[in-house]
Figure 1 (tube, one colour):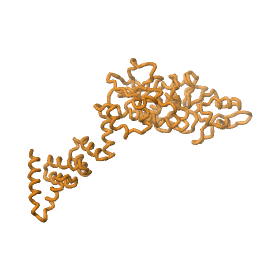
Figure 2 (tube, rainbow, N blue to C red):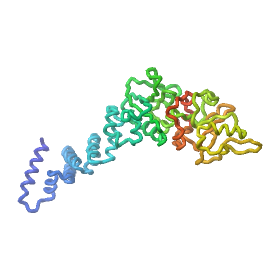
Figure 3 (tube, rainbow, N blue to C red):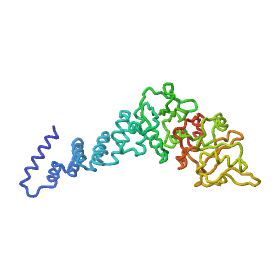
Figure 4 (cartoon, rainbow, N blue to C red):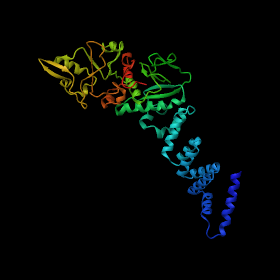
Length: 394
């Protein structure tokens, strides 16, 4: 009421100065402010602020902000931060992309905001086209496989976005059969932390016929044939590593027993796409040709002789010349724990299957991945020794 009375007085004063040929700067400022001039409204707010009349300053700065004053928005955010979301909304309506991104991030971590509401407002602007194609609700007719993603709270929406971004970056243009994800909020989902710090989630209610991803609130990530559990701190590279197991990739770091024994002795249902295991490091020409024929990446190796070095007397030492650009046969650490077994991978690079922090996902791996492969536990159920190396899996 007080502010309304002030406005009436000011309006009358401005009207009465019509007889004054030379109105003062203060009179001109008020006249412009009353007519909706954003700069003048900002200055009026400044005037009130310096007079320690915060409530009046708030009113005029807010009017200035709504009329497009960036300075007013900055002052509001600085002096009245408790209403920051309101100021961001005003800025976003003015076309401020930074404000739009901040609002999206706030809503993404807000347990009150549902995924569907967040996506309806921010999905188009905050997600890449490739990531949006992975959302089952928006692409039902295109999805060949739908993977439920279970979260206990809406606050895990940010982790869902991280999953979409990570998986979309591994698919590339060679993915003919898109896998999609379906967000499911289940407050009753319970996870604890095992003695080895691995997340341990209740899986009793899950369908054995459907692969499922669970967001755990604590503990390390792990992957099994039908269940992937992602720990609270799983970043993009950890997600890619875990997801790759469902694409047919085996670990390239030294597996731990007893998983190493089973894997390196060939006790798996399907051949991994990035690892071959041999019983020796030297072969004859016929043996080397046979190895070349069974390589999952054979099409990328034009000549069997590129897989080894000649030793003479029809003997070849396995291993391609170290070349980061060439596909061949390179030693992997996978079977180090198993005597008489040697593992080999197609690239010399240290990929995220060896150390997830490397972030390296070669173009060849995009070609090799097999989303439909029914993976055996020796491919995907692992204790992630990489977690115990330079930086733990989270």
